[in-house]
Amino acid sequence: MGDEKQRSHPIEKSASKWQKLARKRWIYPAVYLGFAAIVLAAVLWMQGGQENAGPRDLGGVNEERSAFDANDESVPVLGDSEVFKVPASEDSGVFVQKQFYDTAASTEEQQAALVFYNNTYYQNAGIDYAKEDGSSFDVKAAMTGKVVKATEDQLLGNVVHLEHANGVVTVYESLDALEVAEGDKVEQGDKLGVAGTSTFNTDAGVHVHFEVRKDGAAVNPLDVFNQPASAIEGKQNTEAGDAVSNPSASEGTDQKGTESEMDAEKKAEDDAKGADEDKSDEQNNNKQKSEQEKSDTKDSQ
Image (cartoon, rainbow, N blue to C red):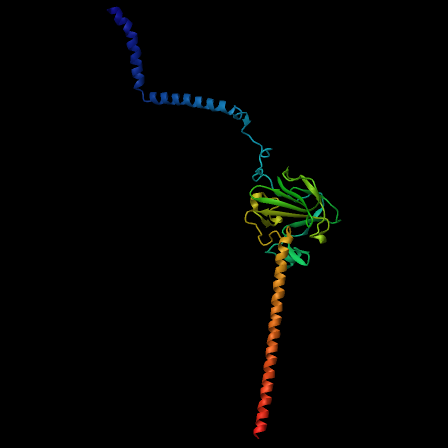
């Protein structure tokens, strides 16, 4: 019996120590913080293992797709990393031969931005570039995009249209030769062709006609150079339209307008002539009436 009391004594002594610790105020917060530290370490370890893993494999197809995927017909999205550039090399020596027709410009500037063709003036919907010596030069893509049109036009020369993001299209006309075809995807600065001449603007000589369009409306290229495509918003000039790039479409309208003006002038002349004839008839009638009255007076006497 005394031996059992001696053997149980160490256990009772240990329990007594835990009871004393439990009565301490700091024991429970210490235990809680220790457990939280263990959980946090486990979470961090698991996240580190996932970050070291490669891209997910979806049936053998990598999730990371190129913006110029061969089977992707959409226009590459560049964000604001790329800005518009002049469609020629910096060392090409080109200058602006004819400015964009701006409705907010002065009358003199607007007159200088007109193109005369087939006895009709057209508003320049872009900018014409040429060299002082009249020689040709390489025409470059002003921004990365997709060729949606590359064709020969009897009036405008060879024409290239590049489609970009957000409804933006750049137009290159009066090219002497083409280096791209419809469906090609080109990088900024890639050669599209060389400057040439056009029947529409013979006065310009060797040049390239360059346009920037937003949702079909002409935009002054000088407003967007060295800026991203997002800067085009709100800069449309809807009055310039496609007059330069499609003069035959507006030519009929201009001719109709001329015919209307001629008809109005003719009508005014006819009205004036009719008024003169009526006045002459009235004068003749008055003269005849006066002579008749004189004759009647003479007879009565």
